[in-house]
Length: 73
Image (cartoon, rainbow, N blue to C red; front, top):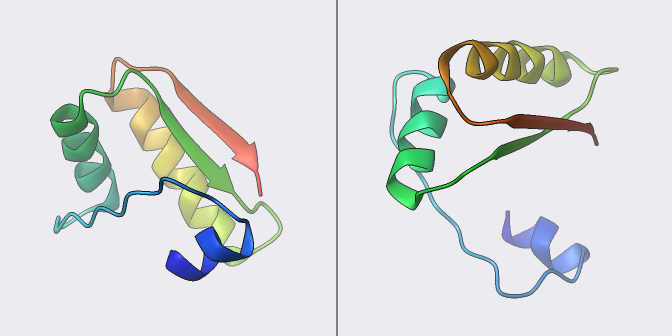
Protein backbone atom coordinates (compact mmCIF):
# COMPACT_ATOMS: atom_id res chain seq x y z
CA UNK A 1 0.00 0.00 0.00
CA UNK A 2 2.82 2.38 0.84
CA UNK A 3 4.60 1.63 -2.43
CA UNK A 4 1.39 2.27 -4.41
CA UNK A 5 0.80 5.56 -2.58
CA UNK A 6 4.38 6.64 -3.26
CA UNK A 7 4.33 5.69 -6.96
CA UNK A 8 1.10 7.64 -7.44
CA UNK A 9 2.24 10.61 -5.33
CA UNK A 10 -0.72 10.25 -2.98
CA UNK A 11 -0.64 12.45 0.09
CA UNK A 12 -2.51 12.38 3.38
CA UNK A 13 -2.94 8.59 3.16
CA UNK A 14 -4.19 6.38 6.01
CA UNK A 15 -3.64 2.62 6.27
CA UNK A 16 -6.10 0.34 8.03
CA UNK A 17 -5.92 -3.41 8.55
CA UNK A 18 -8.94 -5.40 9.72
CA UNK A 19 -8.72 -9.03 10.77
CA UNK A 20 -11.84 -10.82 9.56
CA UNK A 21 -12.63 -14.30 8.27
CA UNK A 22 -14.08 -12.92 5.02
CA UNK A 23 -13.02 -9.88 3.01
CA UNK A 24 -16.65 -8.74 2.79
CA UNK A 25 -16.97 -8.84 6.58
CA UNK A 26 -13.81 -6.77 7.05
CA UNK A 27 -14.98 -4.14 4.56
CA UNK A 28 -18.39 -3.92 6.24
CA UNK A 29 -16.86 -3.48 9.70
CA UNK A 30 -14.47 -0.83 8.40
CA UNK A 31 -17.24 1.18 6.76
CA UNK A 32 -19.27 1.06 9.98
CA UNK A 33 -16.32 2.06 12.19
CA UNK A 34 -15.25 4.87 9.86
CA UNK A 35 -18.79 6.14 9.29
CA UNK A 36 -18.49 5.91 5.51
CA UNK A 37 -21.33 6.74 3.16
CA UNK A 38 -19.99 4.90 0.10
CA UNK A 39 -17.77 1.93 -0.76
CA UNK A 40 -15.43 2.15 -3.74
CA UNK A 41 -13.50 -0.84 -5.14
CA UNK A 42 -11.06 -1.19 -8.00
CA UNK A 43 -11.46 -4.31 -10.17
CA UNK A 44 -9.11 -5.94 -12.65
CA UNK A 45 -11.49 -7.88 -14.93
CA UNK A 46 -8.79 -9.42 -17.11
CA UNK A 47 -6.98 -11.07 -14.20
CA UNK A 48 -7.90 -13.85 -11.80
CA UNK A 49 -7.61 -11.37 -8.91
CA UNK A 50 -10.30 -9.32 -10.62
CA UNK A 51 -12.68 -12.25 -10.47
CA UNK A 52 -12.38 -12.37 -6.69
CA UNK A 53 -12.99 -8.64 -6.41
CA UNK A 54 -16.08 -8.95 -8.58
CA UNK A 55 -17.45 -11.54 -6.18
CA UNK A 56 -16.71 -9.24 -3.25
CA UNK A 57 -18.36 -6.27 -4.91
CA UNK A 58 -21.43 -8.35 -5.78
CA UNK A 59 -21.65 -9.62 -2.19
CA UNK A 60 -21.31 -6.09 -0.83
CA UNK A 61 -24.05 -4.80 -3.11
CA UNK A 62 -26.36 -7.50 -1.74
CA UNK A 63 -25.53 -6.89 1.94
CA UNK A 64 -25.01 -3.16 2.51
CA UNK A 65 -27.25 -0.15 2.37
CA UNK A 66 -24.48 2.11 1.04
CA UNK A 67 -23.77 2.69 -2.64
CA UNK A 68 -20.92 0.58 -4.03
CA UNK A 69 -18.79 2.07 -6.82
CA UNK A 70 -16.55 -0.27 -8.81
CA UNK A 71 -14.02 0.96 -11.33
CA UNK A 72 -11.57 -0.74 -13.67
CA UNK A 73 -7.98 -0.55 -12.47
